[in-house]
Amino acid sequence: MASPTDATSTTSCCSPTDVSRGVQEYYGATLSSSADLRTDACCDASSVPEALRPLLARIHPEVLSRYYGCGLVVPPLLEGLRVLDLGCGSGRDVYLLAQLVGPGGAVVGVDMTPEQLAVARRHQQHHAEQFGFANVTFLEGRIEQLEQLPLEPGSFDLVISNCVVNLSADKLAVLNGVRRLLKSGGEFFFADVYADRRVPEALRHDPVLYGECLSGALYWNDFVRLARRAGFADPRLVSDRPLEVTDPELAARTGAIRFFSATYRLFSIPELEDACEDHGQAVIYRGTIAEHPHALPFDKHHWIEAGKVFPVCGNTFRMLADSRLAPHFEFIGDFSRHYGLFEGCGAALPFGTPANTTTAAPAAASATSGACC
Image 1 (cartoon, rainbow, N blue to C red):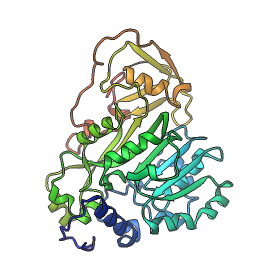
Image 2: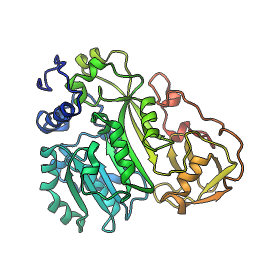
Image 3: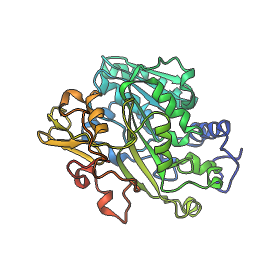
């Protein structure tokens, strides 16, 4: 296979074996730090919340320098949870999450790149001394083959990944593996790259575009279909940002395709339906999550103000009632009545674009009370 640094190469890297080898070479040997990336698809340091910066400051500089993710993947209420990080790389997110889950929780990182894992493991003792406890484990393996790792089915409260699923040649296998490992009511909360259309086969053969998290990106609606096939009936978009391909050579190759970095949350709840159905239900957020005392941004279309009766569809009702979020809500209604499809559901492109500043705004500014996906 041609070197990933050869921008003119179109050597195929799309069989599962070749994809894995190409990704391992790109992230293990070609890139020495995040500064070597040629697009902003896999890095967005500006999105680090202020409250988490002191936690990042406790992480070893070498671990931070080998980070290639798109922002942070940190939902609330992590204390005591058992968390799996797919494609953990040098371990930045693992060590961040380790502090949030605390000594009563545990974080397992999985990666297939020996060079990255060597960095993560080299600093385990450093972080144990920094935190005052040791609660992390690193495993070498492929995220498409989670069943081959020593991980018990139904043993994780939360699975995260950060700009990794697009690098997989078998994305359905990844989703199936995650579903198998999650507890009932657990969730897959992850950031990744998506396209507004299907990426042409010729581009998916390009090792640089693949390594830069672009040509392996799924068309967003194909991702939704795959998630449902894997048993995640109602994928929820949490946030998104348009990506700009600033490298002239790469931009010329990708042409009119628009790419987005987006965070989704997928709940492992068997009763979820593939549409938002109206059962006349509502919830009241107690305002008891420390990071969100006034309103909970559950997803891009649910900005739930504290103390207010908030109408929800049956799926949202279950996501809140059957997950770790339940103690922070009051629940009104049941499933004894049905009023049809919940008003506001649709199937248009969910991502905001630079030309449409209204839909590109944060959920806090763009969501409407009671709106459902």
